[in-house]
Image (tube, helix red, strand yellow):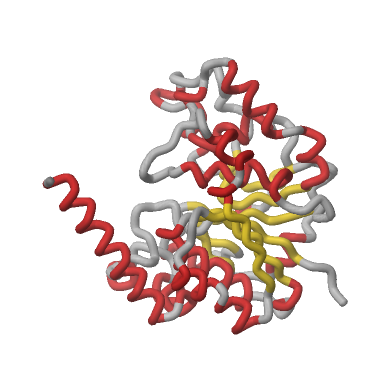
Length: 292
């Protein structure tokens, strides 16, 4: 029997459909479907959405493991003072706790953001050589600007723009080394310097923690700002960081996102349109609250 392939996602109930799509794209791109173990770090999920997510088990025989972080005192304590916004809710920090939340007998995982789409056998990434380091990642396409900010000067006392800087939307993690590092304490040390309000959420924090101790992986394993031009480059993982998300109804028609039509069929037409109605309803409720 082949060894399991462990993959971590983190999301809330408003992002259940993209989370399902990431998992289904992984399953569709490998023959080792029954070896896949998806570890879902999640905020409260409705019964209907949980049933949708469990479709991965019914269709492919993969395994799901659930981690309701809203019930975790560790998670609550860890994120209490960390910055958040409507676009970046505190669930984004769950990836920093994988070494604490996952069973100790798991040595390696892949973390994937829920705005990604996998097009290559995930085992190739899972088995990639990390060269003895605790983390493998892809350099961010706009790395110098994210790190140094306005005029490449704003955060120069925190980041040197000449240093490599990775995108945190895809991470290959050596959990045993993460446990030895104690990422929680490293983040607490950063907070103690009074720099949190100047950082770009989890990504800046992880780049500070793993400065000089991460392995650069090929760009195709996290193709950032995935737009139609990338369709000719045989990307292994597309990362939809642009505003034109593939789950938007017009993305395929207006060619705003790579493989937008394919993405819809990976999500499945039924779920795609239910997710569109969900987002439309949320938009109107927000408008009504503001009007009130």
